[in-house]
Every structure is written in structure tokens, then in C-alpha cells.
Image (cartoon, rainbow, N blue to C red; front, side, top):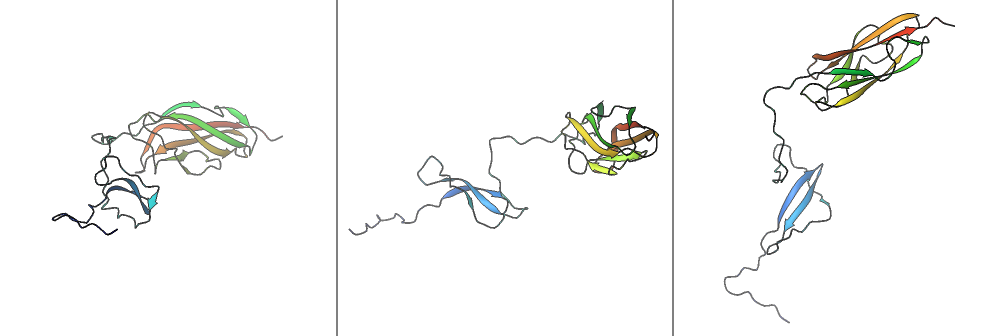
Length: 187
């Protein structure tokens, strides 16, 4: 059979396929297409190989999920000590003993703790712990456990190590965390 000829004034070109495309790493993910004359989207099986969209020019399709609003003004950093989860103050330990210290703390400010937030040594012996350790990310109002590994000093007597939280701009904040131990006499 032969081809039929289009009626006068009717184009043989198909209308363009309309698709939503979302950037995913170095590929584009086709999220839905509408074929002309159809009401339901056609969703492909997976990502399409394509160059990444430059960061300055991506077009994000509208979603039904509302975007969070930013609070006006700067947030406030604060931390509240809640409890010693391990090694209560005054615990007697052997010289050179490994110590697994855990403090329970609440992010009592309005800032979320994220990249750049650290726990820093501020006074007394560091007892073998790093001078600064990344804080576990915590949303405002969340309770977290802060954990550091120490080694008891070799000298007998009472020893206290003191620590504070520091934000990404280098400002100390919140309650002071400390551990006071008593190293026993050798033997």
C-alpha cells in the first residue's frame, strides 16, 4: 500500500515532546514527558547521558512541596550540657588507661550545627585527644552524644580536661564540657 498524502494545510511534522529534566550528578534524569494528545506522562527507565548543567543556569521544575522559608536575622549558637554518659567526675583510673568519654548535650540555640562546627580543647591536659574534633551535625533543639577518646596521664592525682563548642566562624559557645579523673598510684 502506498503512503497517504496529508490534507492541504496539515503538516507532517510531529509536535515536540515536552519533558521535565532534573540534574543528577553528571547526568540528566528524565522525570516525565508528555506526548502530544496524551494526558498521562511517559516516564523513561533511567538517566540520560548528557553533559552536566552548569551550576549558574539550572532550571528546576516547580514542585508541589513548599520550600522552607528562611528565618529573618541571624541564628544563635548555644549548647546545654545534660549529662555525663560515661566516666563521671572523680572516677579513679590507672595511669595510661584508655578512656571513652561521652557527654550528652542539647543544641539549645537556633542554628543547626553543620560543617565547620567543632569541639575544641580549651584548658588542662588534652590527654591524648585531638585539639579539635568535628561536632556531630545537629538541628536546633536536638540532643546528641559527644564522644572523645582519651588516655589517662601517667602522673597520679586529679586531672581535668576542658572543652568548648566552636562555630564555623571560630566563636566559642555553649556550656563548658570537662572530665575530671583521679589517676591512681602505680601498683
